[in-house]
Amino acid sequence: MNEQRRQILEMLAEGKITAQEAGRLIDALERQQPDSPPAAESRPKTRPKYLRVMVSWADESGGEGPGRVNIRVPLQLLRAGVRLASLIPPQALTKVNAELAKSGVPIDLTELKPQHLEDLIEHLDDLTVDVDDPDSKVQIFCE
Image 1 (cartoon, rainbow, N blue to C red):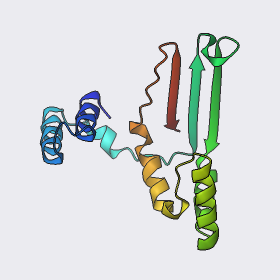
Image 2: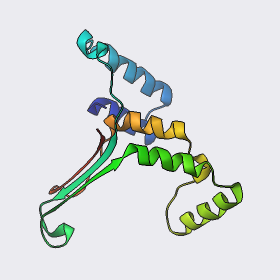
Image 3: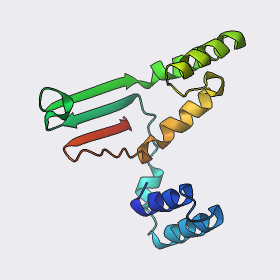
């Protein structure tokens, strides 16, 4: 997602502009951008296989000096987990959601559907994570 589009969405989220105004601004942005080359459109998009989370820091904020975390999670594992969650009986889901909420995890497993996971995976290309520490870097993407 480009910077201008992100700023428009932030203004919408903060209530500075209406949804209709945001739509007009985004339409204007799309008209300004040149068309992408035909070679990029004809190339099929490959289905990502892994979710990669990389965190690095250069100072003492991570504990014992500079460090790096690099996690590669197979997306098939996430897909299987979502399918398994759909098999949990409703009574158990209520108890699990209550325990998650008590632990400070704001996830409602009744809302977790396989199509939602696929939508999330598809939009991870647009994900940006802001970190307050200028010496730290966080990247999350699919590969």
